[in-house]
Image (tube, rainbow, N blue to C red; front, side):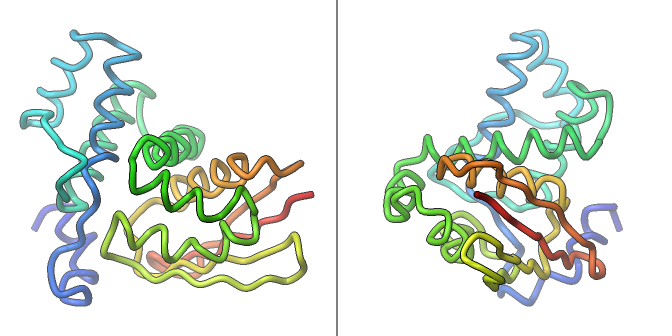
Length: 193
């Protein structure tokens, strides 16, 4: 059994099918490498990934493909995984949502309001993935917890998505950190001014 099969085994069956993600996230990774390293970088990434880099935002792909592609990008561009690199790629993925017509429509519904953004996190994820559970709890008007369960994404990557979402809302001094509660279980503490 491969690393990714072991990682995803707890999620298969909970969602009926294998966990999937919208192709826009894979396309964004490919575009990122193209921008950083040009066509030679894409050739190297294709060799590292082991299959063609042809993805469509109109399709979904098994999450293990995104995780494998992300790992290949982390190794090739950043010299390996790190929280800083994962945070950056999470922010890049939020930008993918902004480029997607469905994502733009969904984000327009929050009117750049951070409370609506946090409250809608579960809805936004469901537009582009079929795995994980997300819930939120406001501790004050500008302080919230987002709980994430059964999500194979790295917590620093998710943190990048959250920080990019707060910046999209143009809040002052956004801050967020996470605590690991167990395997694939995290709580993100979020504040802003």
